[in-house]
Length: 349
Image 1 (cartoon, rainbow, N blue to C red):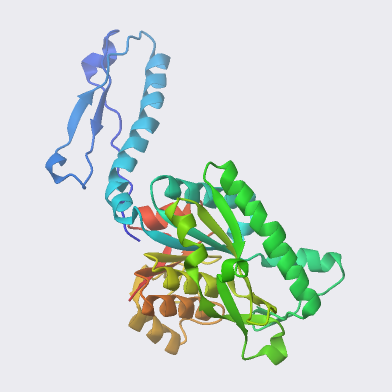
Image 2 (image 1 turned 120 degrees about the horizontal axis):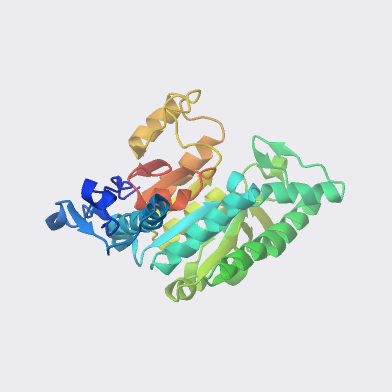
């Protein structure tokens, strides 16, 4: 959650003389970035004189200059964080509300492409629960869940593979390519990226698996050539049997195997809450010991526990930071990476 707070842009100011004069000059105070301490002093800079005799033209000039200058200042503030993450790998798990809403999906895709364009190396892991449910419903199979995990028989596994690998994955690849980056769609089966094993609860859950092994060999040339791998959370065991694997788990194991700088899980909640009944009690940053204490005290419960455990496991294997962020917020990825406010909870080792 490194970064710069959005700078406070002072209002445009006009001297009494400039407002009255038909040959007035527009002055805009510019705040220089904290990244450049030598430039801390605020100095008013005169923009080229704007000839105008009408107040409407003056107002138009103000509206034309303010947004552009604001954008420039924000970019300047983000420089140290862009430098920090340039060339580093970030694994993003995509799911939840950000997957259901077209506007949120567009926001995530644009964030991903922007990060790639400035030299950050994203790996994009996705689930696709809602779409799986829709297709199961079409063929008359009722979705069945046990403690939040999809019970996956042979027929359901076939649909899971078709939807995640054949539909959701390729749609995301198409959207990323359309937005200006180059994406490559994969699943855990491709290049033996992931080797699965049955869940210890296989008798109850069917073909729900865990990650037994990660071989990132197939990913390295893609990432090094600035392509964005888009990975569906389906993998096979050594005998070729396919398994449905939790996308959070896949993202965490990939981040660890790849030596990622950061793991980000997009969720439908604000992050980890000190009081789960108080949305305003967001924990912005916490270490492994602190989050384990929260679990033992019952402050972290339900569906948040596997996400926290996924983050802890990745941190224990060398990932620098792991964040659980609010995917319901527009541009949450950029907020998390390029601002000190972030968009959720960051867990550190």
